Image (cartoon, rainbow, N blue to C red; front, side):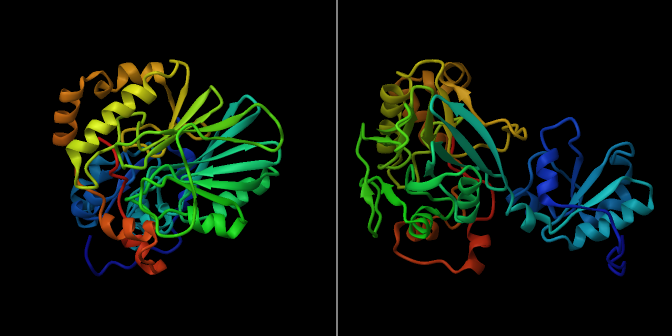
Length: 370
């Protein structure tokens, strides 16, 4: 495909929201990413096949002729050109409008009913970030909100809920927290752990603290301190049915202990937290984490969750003794989140970030698990 080819006109388009609704279903399309390999390695939609734009003529035979092909690039320019070229050759090609920039803005939800209320899981698809609205009666609490606070305000309003409390499970390093902004905008109280460093006003969480809803229904949210990923990490028990585990435990791993440069100490704390706070829970309790990895299958409308009993078997790290766990955890950490120092400083309240810099600072998947 020559550099002189014009951008395609009138190509078939698919929005990022429409794509999210297809992923994980029987109608999932073939995902073709035409960026350069180094771009795809940094950040991609799980399951993409990478064929750089310039290589399409030589690799056309690799693409399916009997399946919808969604073409992806950074902002939609290269993918528009590729979509037009593929359509001319008879393929069912559609351009992802706005490319990865558009994908970065996609949120969807799934609901987990609990006695006396419900938990709405909000999925930030491009980052693998999970946050939660816990609602009962006409009231809601928000846990681990991302920076697009209108998402939470709109979801609460659609259910007749007033957001009265906002929490972060820990000091985040991979994305900008929306907790402080959401609390300020709604008038909700802001609750954070005093064992992480925050340089603004908040109400300090403490172990075993309970929060109830004014409706008087049975559901209550209880704080469980779980140091390891960060010193101030906490989980939130929702009744007896579910636990919001933050970055302590995921459905495919555990939180990394190295972001504070005290990996061995934090790994020992994490092992203790997992053994004494997580594995003592009943097997039927549903785990709802703050992140999911690129190998996790996301199905529209179905919460990303697993039971404690399932994770005892599926997460090998949970069966390790302390010394083995520490050795494994300190040797298994992967690449740190890009610009995590700047994001931590912003989430502490030590600096502010301009909106134009956020896309670069938050680019890429979360890197909070091992």
